[in-house]
Image (cartoon, rainbow, N blue to C red; front, side):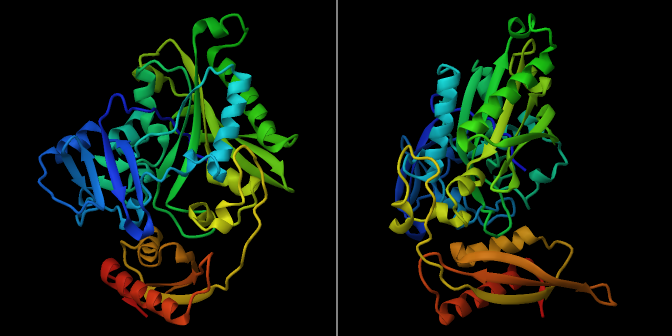
Length: 427
């Protein structure tokens, strides 16, 4: 389900820091802004870390160990840390950047440059910003450590750019587009990855906008929203058949999903709706009404560019990156090779605390992007009430053939980590 996202570039209101990371072959220097509560907690830290993974702010040093900690309240692994600041959506020759710019073009052309654009937000946010400010219920599954990456009990890697919405509304922005990288613990397959990219749009109306329309505020906003997004779908996909499906999001009411009939099947394009009045009220806009939409860039780019595996978006292989050109939407990806997969099965007795997301985190931590899929292929419960799961792990590199020795070593490491970290009994 497409997530609604709301965000705001806050470099001018939150301090910037610089991160240099060379973990796992990445070498990048980037500027990010850090929420004040997070920064205050570490200003007094005397941690001296290697320069290869250091945040700097006017002499204040925040190491990787301040983000990735061996503590019960922290579940951010090294692999996720290496993705911070890569910002694939800001690369004009990357499929995600090309798609982002195509959407920008639609809004610039049809709304006379009225929409402010923000695409350089720090993904480190407070739990209040990530959940409370967008009315996510206290018992919602997305708040669990199984779904969200927690730095500590008050700080997370955002799971949607909606985390910045309240701040932006308070600052008076009425029409804006926000793009950013978001982080969620998830399954392992060709369409899911723990880091992906979203774009959202928000438009705020005043009573003068709807008073003469003959419609109430909510109906007016919903009508404008649907007209806008149908135009966007035609801009990206051409003259396609569309349908609207009623949906639910915590921060909009009514809520909808837009689907298009594309390549002989119905495709969910985005989620949207009329913003909950409580959010506007908290942003000092109680007399206004607004609409919002959110879409996943990877979901659409995989369709538009014929990219079969979400891991490819992170590839630095020139056989992938050289196929795309700035401003050319929908260039069809030409597979440069299909290396053979290797399958390894693993069976174990689960306990009450077992979750598949935790298993996938361990597999990713050992195998990285060599893990193509983790699939439950069998389960049963014996007479003693013990439940067994059998998972098939598919290993495959998108760039080379893997050796039996490599695969066996990965699998033994996965087995060791699963047994020690998840406290389960292997069969």
